[in-house]
Length: 168
Image (cartoon, rainbow, N blue to C red; front, top):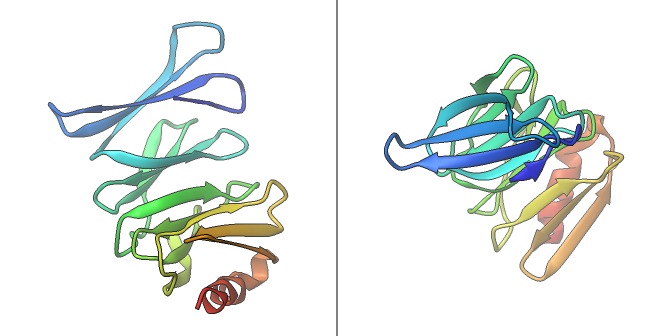
């Protein structure tokens, strides 16, 4: 369960009977349901965009969905080669940073559903990664090391490559 930026609660539940994850939002200070939708599989990682308009779901199958909380629809993103170990929206909600169990970092354009920076590999242990609140830095934790880099959205591939080079 997580709080949405507007104070409503977002709850995820998995049903073994139908093999789907059910996502439900409850109105603030109420048990009344605000909206709900369903995706196939078990959601292992989630993130909510800062404006609350999108919910990202990393599934146990390696699939990645981004759900629009206004239209109550979910679209599948270009999938990584393996299961995710973290997901993080940038502050504008237009990009999604993910890391995989195999040590890859991936950056998606949420609008086009495409991978902006090809999967970059090389971290020894499954990393976790996230954007700073201002979006000008990303942090990556792998093994016992934390990497933080200052960057701009025009140079993501260079930044992710630098993280990978530093990890060796």
